[in-house]
Image (cartoon, rainbow, N blue to C red; front, side, top):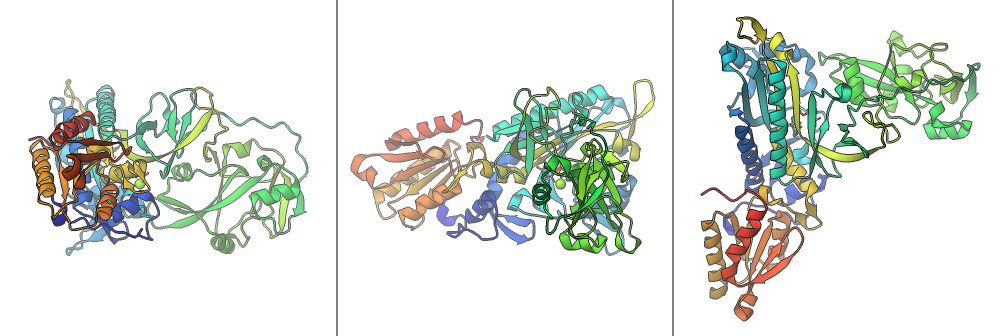
Length: 586
Ligand code: ATP
Ligand code: MG
């Protein structure tokens, strides 16, 4: 690749719309351009990095015995109706009608399509096990597309589906994917961690997420400081039961709390700890059919956070969203900060369901909002003063909670979910009647698993994990090119010839090289080389004429070596090989 002929439109300015570093750098490095919200064009270098990921994913999926196919993006609504997901999936599913008025959707995932395929073709246990995968663009109409490729609406995913005769075989298929995912993310050169995504079933966990560790992660992981426990905070179940408080019940009392709306302000004003206060939060809930919205009030201890994924699962909702102050007032007639569970009614006869976290049920003589501006109630007790529809684990696990496995101390780290593996069991095969005949001629539903990897998100995650103030620092395996040669003597025949020779020699060895042959100042060539994140930079300039050396600089740690041109190819080959199997097959 000659830089002068390569379409890499780098930007000097930092684009204002980008909030996270990978998004900023991918725009600045000319890797992506936005078409519309959450929808991007992958430019040649962005695509090159994506292709690197795809190649690793393919090789490891094939090695694990999975077979590649490619399913359609457009899917008929009727197929989704068979599993009930046409209604349940919510607004992320982009639905539309074709010219014959047939309802369709764009594939956000492919369980229905693959199950339909397999039920038509697989008859006997002899055709099993089967693991089929594809690498394809998915469409999800995300509520908040953001952070560039991290959360797009259109993005590239690898999705695989396994079919087995029984749970034991399905467990083997799952383990194969678990191992393949480790190899994939290792080969990508990423620091990652596999976490339990549903610790409700510790021991027999049926879902793992693979998290790239990076500060800007949208996900938080709880990790035990003593044992191997690691889980997504969204799903980390709180195992320890709250301690029953044995205090005698006191008489409820209304107190004036003028202008005290925040938990901290109320507690300070009443000289109580936040463990004595119950927060009442109103959520707007979109039900499974994606249409109807209704309010739900959630009660948690003053110092706790509602875990929205747990709430969503409890209500079997498509979406839950915290109501804004104005909405709370419109729904209840009470300003936020003064809401409480007693006499909580919606205006105009609207019903508000009240649900409480487990901890709330164990609290005694609590403070709650009085349902009236500038007032709270003291010594309120659940059961005596108010009832709730459901008590459940609804709060986010906190650092002071004990490890659910060993009771040890927990800590939190940030991560980006790049992969997700799941034991599906027979949910889809039963709904869609995907069956096979076992050895005894019995008809049985197929046991399924599904396994996703966010291919385009991996590139963003790699940048989140590997960058500095000057730009991207690609792991060698994902870099669009492994080496950049800067020709700093375009008008010097000797320098240019040496740069061209190195370019040819490296290419002949299967190295991907970008030759910066542009008529630009050295300063901007250095800047672009850093920005693009190419692992090794070779500078061919005046020092070649004077001292007979070229300079090689490692992008990651700035290590610089000076070599004669004859030593360069061997040196770089050794460096690239040491970084893993990323040389082009010739
Ligand atoms: P999230 O919780 O981040 O929304 P998900 O649980 O919806 O993820 P899956 O359905 O398991 O994700 O999809 C498999 C993989 O696809 C994820 O692990 C992630 O890497 C990737 N992915 C999911 N949604 C997006 C998106 N909007 N943009 C880019 N990649 C995505
Ligand atoms: Mg999602």
